[in-house]
Length: 445
View (cartoon, rainbow, N blue to C red):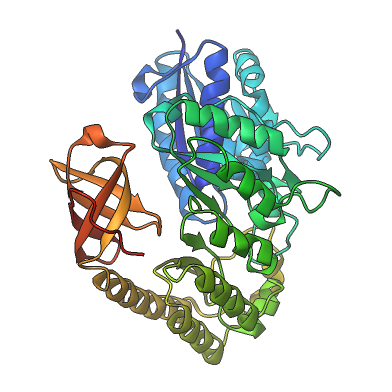
């Protein structure tokens, strides 16, 4: 059988798309391999939201392209970077056989076949009518406790810092029946945890009259036999309605954790980012979520040094961190990305040293808060879904709590996919340490 090797740089959506490519090529007789040297087809699926994946792409191709001098290997570049820079990449790497964006994933088999005789460039955006969401399940899903399921593609928001509209196109919601069918087939392979994916999941279905809403989708997935834990990403604070908050009140298998990007604590900066919510609105959403789930944990995204951000604006971000006490955050100094509206604001660019200093200040306090919150969990008993052996310690397994805390504890890898009752013994900045509790000791809420 011909073999395909897929390397992914980027977010959960890139990971999901890679799984779809494995599944679709599998139908055409390809076997997935984890050994680059064995591959007949090599695909690198890339992100373009941040700078580092682009650097990784160029390094990776430096390893792969010399292989073509020794034997016939089809090499392709996929993903968001391919969508934005397709023409440039096609010219820069004449030995690359195909370059294609996310909307072309459903045609991967056809493109690979064509690339055997001629180069392929496909960065066409597809319209909403009949958008082809591949329904094939990633063959690797059966080896995992959790799996991603996309519920929409693209984004209609115009956040000035964000390149996603240029890389993923307009927002299209996937039919509810298709989502549920994929969830059902994943559960049949042994998957216990479902993570629903979208650029703005809360706007699911809102463009089409009569289409199920995101809250209705959550309830439908939660009602499916075998779905033991539900997560989703990413949410837009503007679009979280009371119907979604009520889901946290009513659905016990909906995780008590939400990644809710705020980007800045300053209303002035939020307006310049075109986020269309205020600090007060964000805090109101947080209060509603914690009213129905007192143990609710939030993580977020933060950008420091956005063009025009003053010291007072940054102080507002720091005070929001104190008010919400995020358990984790993805924080970055602003980095101008091509094809984004914020490029028009660069006459007010913040010096790199200032942006970096603010980032370091934010991250230092974030780390302290994470340590404090994790220390407060020491002695509590948590219900944990076992994900497998620890990556670092022999005889130790790891899992996650409903609040998305990673906890490592002594155990048997054969218990992967089951629930364990674990007492927390130590707290670190990013993880917890624990010991398994036998019997029926009460789990702390």
